[in-house]
Amino acid sequence: MKYTAEPSEKSTVKITLTFDKGEWDDANMKAYQKTRGRYFVNGFRKGKAPKHVIELNYGKGVFYEDALNELFNDHYYDVIEKEKDNFTAVGQPELSVGDISDEGASLIATVPVKPDVKLGAYKGINIVKAEYNVKDEDVEAELKRLQERNSRLVEVEGRAAENGDTATIDFSGSVDGKKFEGGTSENYPLVLGSGSFIPGFEEQVVGMKVGEEKDVNVKFPEDYQAEELKGKDAVFAVKLNKLEKKELPEVNDEFIKDAAGAESVEAYKKETRERLEKQAKEKGDAETENNILKAISETSEAEIPEAMIENQIDMMVRNAEYRLGMQYGGMKLADYLKYMGGTMEDFRNGYRAQAQDTVKSQLVVDKIIREENIKAEDAEIDAKLEEFAKAADKTLEEYKKDVDEAQREYIANDIVINKLFDFLKANNNLTAKAEEAPAKKPAAKKSTAKKAEGEEAPAKKPAAKKSTAKKAEGEEAPAKKPAAKKSTAKKAEDKPSEEGKGE
Image (cartoon, rainbow, N blue to C red; front, side):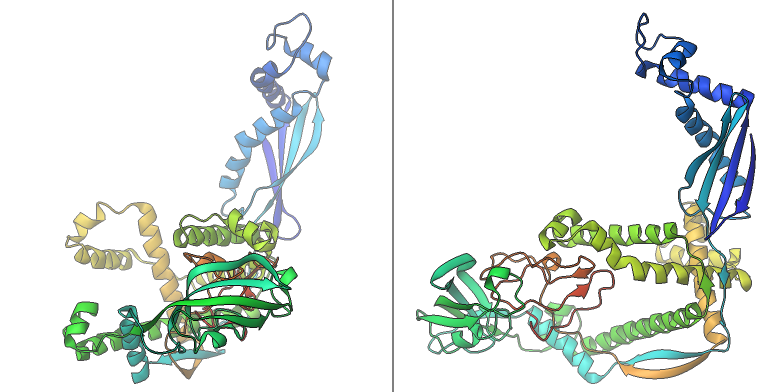
């Protein structure tokens, strides 16, 4: 077999595999031996007809496709290995047939390859250095959350419902005198003032007393997800069965020991500040590094093959499906998409822009590493392994016995990346822009994939069909306002939308 490999358009290489008569005849014979059982010829038992008889009955090229596949599998990957110093294949090739005759055949494989990058400036540029400061109120907010996690509901007697109470209600909704699907529930726990239901519902429950019944008049929003309920006036017959309020534990040393394992309130605050400061530094460093990469990527050029973007999207989709399954009892992505009324194509397209940026950043990183000859020395890898060994209470030599080449490579890559960003930070102008580390945001209304509710809320239905590139607020009660769409591909921490406050 002979081959040629030459650059083609848009980060591809055209590999032409040429086979002489002997190789071609041998491949056809192998194809015949493997596939002859497929063909029926009168006068022969199935699989027993000679090769030339099958060719007479089915055509001379009956074995060509299988023969070409045989030759491709036998030789293509060897060529890729031989040429690894010249190019890196990043996807499966497109195949086409060159010449076929009794004297031989040729096969053309056009394979996407890792593109070269034309770097923009990556030294001496101005970069915003992100810094996040931890304040006393951030520590107090953590203490408050600890209280909230250890709170309990106590039954309220002798007064009417107030905002902040948990009202256990029965309700039955109707539009134009007719009940609608999902509009009825019993013993539904509703936190008053949470903004869980459509405007006007919770406000009318405030002031009710246990055992009281009343009609609650509301209007569904014009942008409500259920088409048949948009803009409709509705009446909910409501009965208040039970009223509870949240009782927070007193903050003292005994509570802290029991809830957090710290010796005292002051010790907890000290530990909490240290943890928040570490998180703030990590967040600032990560954001600064992203700022550096973004600035360099914006002025760099690369002809990225579609295969690399698709591979990155594949990874993102797998991660999304894994998170979905882990968080929601094995929920399948296909079921989520069906519930959301979307398609896998829409879902994947939601990741496309992010995937393209990610791939370009990776290419830029690789290029700078090569340009600056950044490497991980054996001594540096051993130093890192020694840290792990000490943590495992072993000697370095004992620990290294369980470390394979893949693990060493992983550690080496981590060292190289850290050295790269140390280099970039040292060789660019970082201007600090301090920002406060935000206290933990109130939880937003939970999406379908994020919400495991025991009982349905009023008129709960699947959200109206949305682009699956955007993450809808899934399992909402129709008595809730739909939240603004969010990008599934680039999900930031949710905030309560104007239409729907956090639960």
